[in-house]
Amino acid sequence: MSGPRRDLQGEACTVTVSFVDRTLTCRDCGREFLFTAGEQEFYQSRGLQNEPRRCPECRAARRAADGNGRARVMHDVICSNCGKPTQVPFVPTGARPVYCLDCFQTVGRR
Image 1: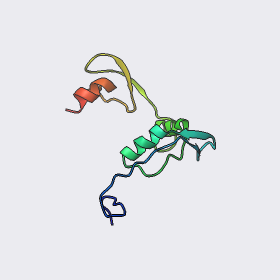
Image 2: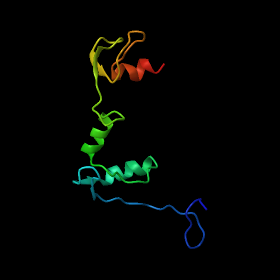
Image 3: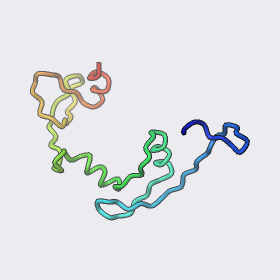
Image 4: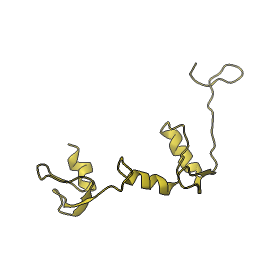
């Protein structure tokens, strides 16, 4: 049963949650890392209920790897919009324009 929280008299009330920094252990490397109060607030604001199991370094390494655990291969290209050199995680075929991150966020999503 969900809905607003109620106090002892049955009136709707607001529940305030305060966060404190917590030390967690990374499941990959075994090192301890800090799960800050700010990160906890961010997780709550996004509806994330599970705390991180990996330290920031292991999370970044996991994101950088492809699905087979290998390092993602980046390819050097020139942005079709602004002309800046950039890198992309795919082999450009020349059939479509390739954008840097800044241009992709504005031009590429039209």
